[in-house]
Image (tube, rainbow, N blue to C red; front, side):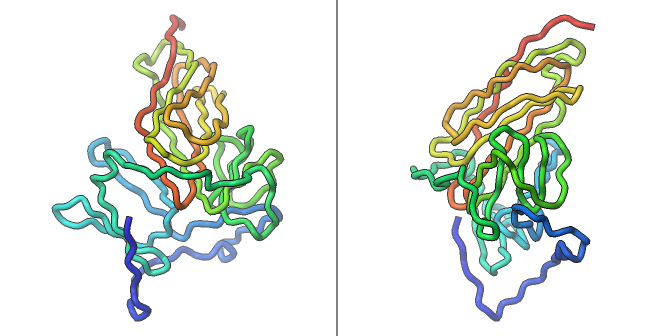
Length: 253
């Protein structure tokens, strides 16, 4: 990705949402993640699905070049970013040393700019939102997590599937494992959880991304949805190659 700074005289036309204090949001007494100013979504015409919001980088405009795979965007600080989408088919990421450093020591209030995730999955803080449990509804505000992990200069990537019946709508299934395959040198910290139609969920924090990862669960149900959180450093990417769900099918009424 390349960036091209604009001159001070250049002007941009954009629409900004109201500031949090103008919306009546209370200032939280504990940690808060920096809110995103604009939220972008991506629509897939082939599958009729919507992905988003994408809160980083702080984009105000996105456009594609005709008859090419090039995408251009403008950031809040007046930089133009260029991306060749064809390179996403088989990305080559450089080797890295752990950019997160000490993630268990609580930083000083007011000196932290990143995201927070609970090691036990009992809370997440990102984009000025607090998520008490993996599948609960987020709300604006802050919190102090007892077993929080602190990721500076990072954002939280959140992926959630629709309800899956795994090829059999009527019989009960048991999900015992989820396998993940990432591109080499992907960087991030991973949580993965699975919920059934009764609201029960299981999963765990797996730590730093590896090329091949296994998340063990023992959850029964007829329908499931999968949710994955990845604390992502702003300077180091990751890419998921494949996900497979290991399950057994049993006869039931």
